[in-house]
Image 1 (cartoon, rainbow, N blue to C red):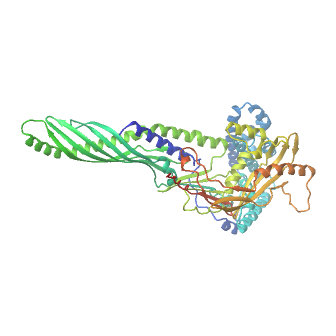
Image 2 (cartoon, rainbow, N blue to C red):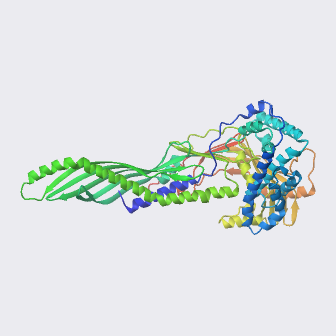
Length: 633
């Protein structure tokens, strides 16, 4: 079983498997301990037995060390940037480094001034390196304030009271609407080194994974699985005798999920049989032999949150031969020679078969190693450079990611939530058993990622057009330049710039802008939202908008007697026209196109779309229906 066709197939199989697995990866750490129940936490007094505690010198020094670490990452970024000197001037870099070295002598007033600069609406401050410094300055400020503020004990009491109120409301309603302030509140308590037991209890309740992805082997296998059907010459020497002939190998290359809890584990498997017809000659005797070799070869690949690795290829073979004929060229004693040859063949057959088995196993192992080595090395490198590193640089790297496989499913469990954010507080919906791919995402995953990416950022129409052109895309009509309107820009709010709210069979999307421009005109903050009902539609699924797109200033109550200003009314009219195109009245959920080598497996029809009031949205896709070929007359 050897040949260039098989080599190319195995190399393609190995690389394809890696790309398919990569499409669901990110980064993170192992699964956490069992999460606490939100209602159970809310039912018990918060802060009970935890009075105000003085912040120690070592804790202040630790906060300063965290700031120095964050400044190191930002400094590395700024040194690579042409605008680095300008940013250092804006941030007051000398004051930042001075405070980072101050330890227990930190000045809360200076830290507050520096924090406000980092919190301002300046494009670029949303980058993860700036955000890390902002959070470190905030934590240091909280610790320093708790150490010096004579009202610190009262501040703690107010925060615990707010925490109790927030959790009680969320437990009563079963929704996360009241939990929006919980992340910053927990972050302030952690920064001030107060109520650690309470913070841990609450974190356990609101830090569950907020993304689950399940991919069936049935979806990936057809891309990897191959039929092996090859003819190859046999030219070998066994026990000093030259063996020549032909072999025909048939079988399959298969993708096989291996049950594993601590990582995703996948085998590339060769399951094949070789039928050979050979002849060997020694002296006047020529022996014709029919052989059957069954071969199993495997290359195991493991993927966890840190890296992609593989084990050396393994192989096992079983060789069975039978004598098909014995030719004797001698003119005398043919019967005697044939009889002696038959006896000798029977004696050496076990040894010859063992040699053949060992060589077949060695060839298969070497072939698997050589055919997959380059692809696996490239895949391991790409995992770091094309997945982990970009996620880290963009601040999207999950705080938790856990991969596992059963004999039929690869599962990815992730949580994305920074120190001032929360994650899921309940278990996800069940997955439709017929789905070949399913994703369950909690609203916090969407909201947290949007805040990391867009919070405080200004996006212009020109920027959108440039990015779409750069990626060879087409600008949607809703984002293009309206001939009746000048070019636009939006500065997103720092908190929850884009927010998903899930309810029973409904979803609501809100866009929060702290500032808008249209040409030379500048407009104040507005919240824009649209709600959709999830409805079945002739074997498919669609989203139907519930009423008009709503556009109002933050905290404005429609129908509450308050009136919009002239500027707000003008902006509302401009935004209404544009966002009516963005949030269409009816959105038909199209079958899911799959990328790369998976394209032929799609598009996948959606069979499940469920939203729950606790913030979970679950989607499942089934296999596409087989296409029946039309036969002509």
